Amino acid sequence: MDPYLKPGRLADVIAALQVMASAERPEREIAHWVLELERISDSPTIARWTSVFLEHREFFVTYRLSPEANLKAALRWRYVFKTFDSKTGKEYTPAEVPALPEEQRRSLTTRPLAGDQIQTLLNTAIGLHTRAIEELTSRRWWVPLITAASGFGGAVVGALLSALLK
Image (cartoon, rainbow, N blue to C red; front, side, top):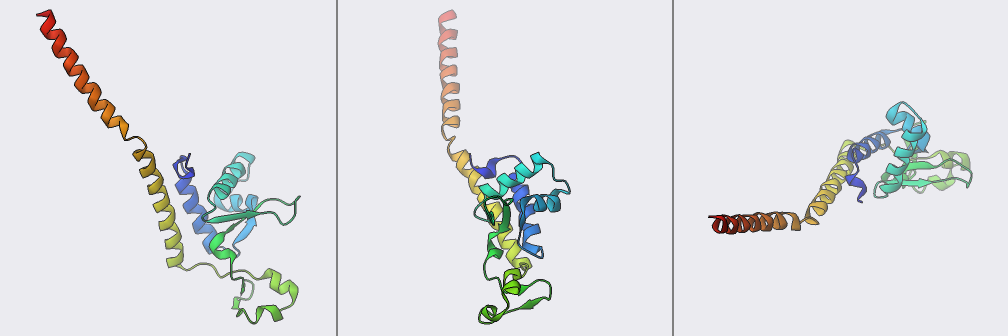
């Protein structure tokens, strides 16, 4: 089943895109994202959001820093070009980054996305949802055909029975 056809999935993807695109940092443990998105962090809610992040690789990347670490999720678009210091608001050039101390380099992230970039992500999610519905509908091409044939068959049988019973 296409993940976009799951009830409430499009709304979840849109919510995650909006929050992750504008967050100070684009990556966190999933439990922290759940707290940000839902204001609760019970196991069923964490499991639901984990499936959102895992099933929508077109937007999200999931990973562990070590085998025993908790699963993290990041917005894929913001997971590249880590040249922004979210604490100071300073943007470094790619040439300046290697000269920074290692601890500072590790804390670099990407700038939150602009409104038009977020809109692009939202439009993409809506388009993928629409395409999933269209594909589901196209797989049922035979339903109107069978319905029409059944109606025609019923009319013929009705006419024959009416003629025989007169």
